[in-house]
Length: 147
Ligand SMILES: [Zn+2]
Ligand SMILES: [Zn+2]
Image 1 (cartoon, rainbow, N blue to C red):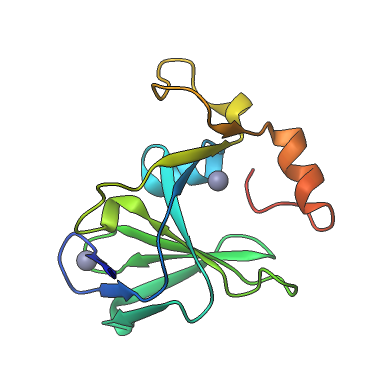
Image 2: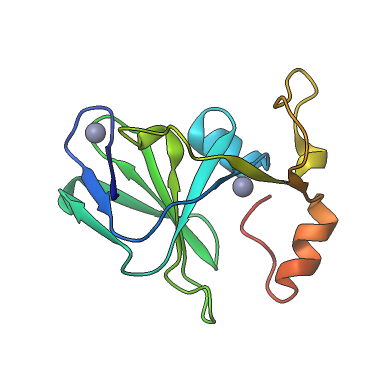
């Protein structure tokens, strides 16, 4: 089953052509500002998604290693994409909130858990949680996009 989605106004739509099995949350300051809350992203490999209305996207270079795309008409955050060279180059994290049907996509991980505002938390247990220091260690080389 492929997943489809769109921005708020519908100028940008997409179809994910690879399997979607999980979503992850990012509590970093940049994702919070960009998404207006906590960002829930679905990892999609390079070329794993067909985008319609690309001309309606604005690509913001948010760091030396990633960019973020939003609809220039309605402002909806659509995806984060890795631009740094390496195995993750081109990988996208598509906002779960843009999905037409986000059911049956479990939240399996949380990044920058130590930066999460204390006024809210996801229910349930068993998710893989990583602190800022752990995320930075995982990516090792360049300074992470998330700040
Ligand atoms: Zn839009
Ligand atoms: Zn983030």
